[in-house]
Amino acid sequence: MALTIAFREVGDVTVLDLNGRITLGEGSVQLREATHGLIGKGGRNILLNLEQVNHIDSSGLGELVSAYTAARNQHGEVKLLNPARKVHELLQVTKLSTVFDIRDEEVSAIASFSR
Image (cartoon, rainbow, N blue to C red; front, side):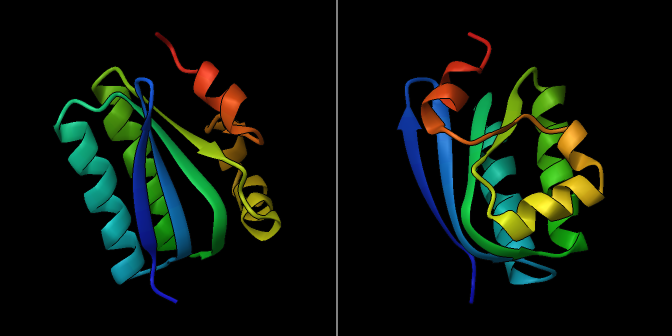
């Protein structure tokens, strides 16, 4: 299943609703273009909704880290919302759960961004 990305604005936070797989090739490229495009246009607060992402490979993890780093370099933030169980376990095994702010509820995630 290809990755689909829906963009929406909630205050000064851009929420990317991701659906599908973030894997080498199309999925990771789409995520990179979406996140780096937002950051390049001045987007500072990005919330990646991972609820409908059923698989992430090492390339996909690399793109999450790349987005995080690019946002931090522009004084922004990338946070993760409601990862599926399998994805959350992968984030824990790779210790990326200690890097990313991972939230279970959108309202608290939105409120957690620096203003």
